[in-house]
Length: 266
Image (tube, rainbow, N blue to C red; front, side):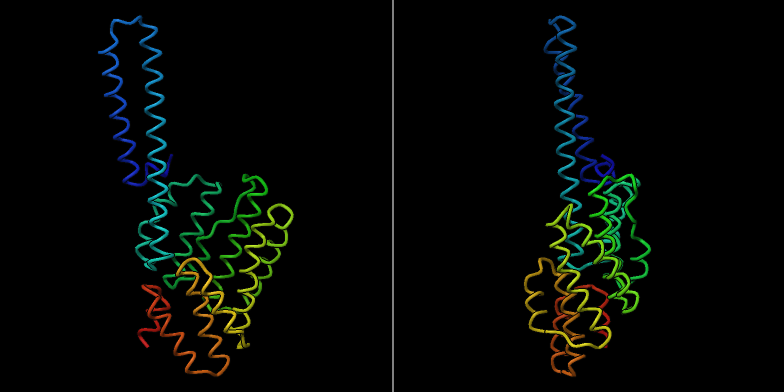
């Protein structure tokens, strides 16, 4: 409910629904004034419950749509500063020590990383508290650890990224008993980030496999992670033409990402 009041569109739905409920109740009082008092009371209570429940449902749907639109601003439109400006309201609406607070912090941190501030991204992350029951807490821990590893990779910190990757891989293995589907999904990130760590040390990588991975990823932000890896892989292979080609692709598709803007300025 807190998110509904924080977002303008859903707050208007709540306000309009409350007003409509009052109008409905007033109309019922007028139209059924000849009924016994107890019947009037029951009718009014039922009408209020129906109207307010419907209002909450619609407001919740509007709030979810607004949050999804904000996430598209980052993951599809690649406008991190616009996302950071808008998404603060979502973070403030979360109950402390809740699962929502953890995931909202991850989303906000992704915005900081995309804007070129990977250290601020690390500081923004929130580890799930003991108040969150298992297996949800372990899944959230893996999500946070995945983000920590990714931000260190974007910060070109191979040693720190390696340590975070070890912790992330351990979290994924621990998930296999309680949530094997999620563990399988996250294993792809473990493999990808292992390759990224190697690239930061100048090791070669299979560019054809990376291109296939980039093709399959669902969002532009995720695809550009791999595109950046292809830049590094071409550099490691002493292939300046390939490096230039992938860098040009990153610039073309990178929107307002900090890394794309840095490449444009060179």
